[in-house]
Image 1 (tube, rainbow, N blue to C red):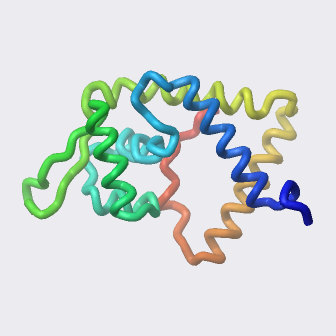
Image 2 (cartoon, helix red, strand yellow):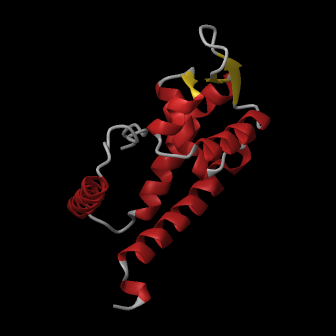
Length: 156
């Protein structure tokens, strides 16, 4: 098998290109595509404990801390000490962070549309089914609960 036929290479390339297109669409927002899972998790449930947010997204605490600092600097969220346990921080969206939700959803719709141009509705559905199967296979192999990182809302 050549590198160009390797599943990991193909998926990685598609993801990088998807990210680049997404970045074109919401580039002025202060968001980086890698931060989108954090934003979706907060749009779904604002005020999460930072440690739990990292666990839910299957990210290291250090990775989440770096992303949160950048999002905070961009004015999209703020961290506050938990009122019941001062050792923990809760993460809250700012007004600006909440306002980006619809813009990001629309950007993802456009990126998906561009990514799937030329696919019929049946091909698109089948492609998504295949991706879900790949994800399910890997989750089962890793022994990971896939519900924890299911951060995205349906965009179609």
